[in-house]
Length: 150
Image (cartoon, rainbow, N blue to C red; front, side, top):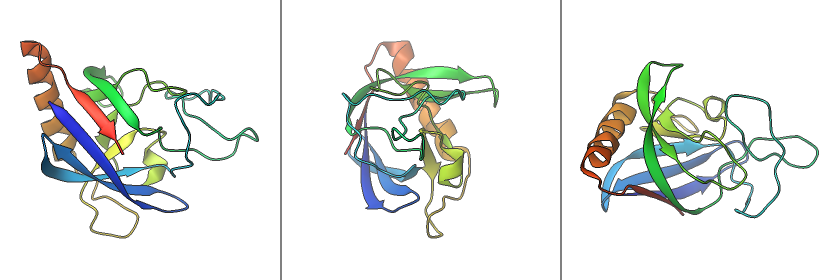
């Protein structure tokens, strides 16, 4: 299964995109600000549950680098559910695909929902649950799952 996230609106506080599964539109995405980090840049651990790159002066969260990532399913104990997880994201740890409403809910992760209000998602969990079920089904059959962020 191929998941593609096309970043459409890069704003100072957030990044909005479109999510496609095997070429078909699935939902919208929301991430932290795209600061143009790359897979080879050094990063500073933040000490939170998820790690994400920060500027050398320790200010500002950021979206993960563009690229192609393998994806697996991870039990998310915080919310007692499964969530898709990106593997080997340079400078980041614990990058999940989950629901949320604003970039403050992201912590480097990719949020799913519908972008009906400027800079926000609806926060519904149905998209995360549906994607998690599909990734879990692929994992059970041995089908590779990738996430391309462009």
